[in-house]
Amino acid sequence: MTGFLFSLTFLVAAPFWALMIVLPHWSWTRRIAASPWIVLPPVLIYLVLVAGSFGEVLPAVAQPTLGGVRELLGSADGAAAGWAHFIAFDLFVGRWAYLDSRKREIPALLMAPVLVLTILLGPLGLLAYLLVRTRFPEKAEA
Image 1: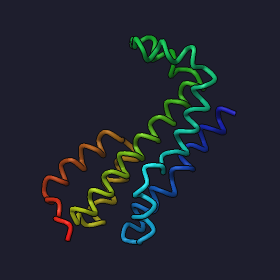
Image 2 (image 1 turned 30 degrees about the vertical axis):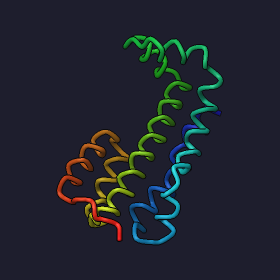
Image 3 (image 1 turned 90 degrees about the horizontal axis):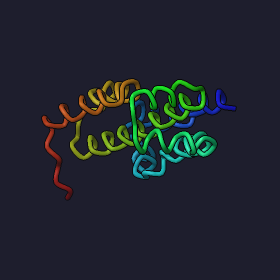
Image 4 (image 1 turned 135 degrees about the vertical axis):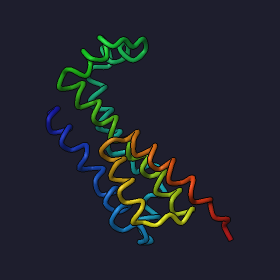
C-alpha cells in the first residue's frame, strides 16, 4: 500500500503542474489554480500515511533530532510521507508563484523553467521565483 501511495502522490499533483506550465493562459488554469484546495489530493495521501504511524511521527517532529528524523524518513512509510509532504508544499508554492506571476505579467516562457525547478527542487524553485519577481513589479488591477 505504501508503494502505491508513494506513486500516486505525484500523479495527483501532476495535472495541476501541467496546467500551470503548459496552459498558463487558459482561463480554466487560472480558475483551477485560484483554489488553494488543489493541494488536497497529496495532503490526503500524507494524512493516510502519517495517521498510521502518528505515535512515531509526533515525537520526531515535536523535538527533532538529526538521528530521529533520519530514522523516521529511513522507512518506506516515512519516505512516502516525506514525499507527500514535499509534493503538497511544492505544489502550494508553485501555485502561489504561478498566480503571482500572472499579476506581474511575467512571461510564461520564463515561468515554465521556474515551475519545473520548483517541482524538482522546491526551495531552489522558490528562490528562483523570488529573484525573477524582483524584475517585474505587480500590476495595479483596473
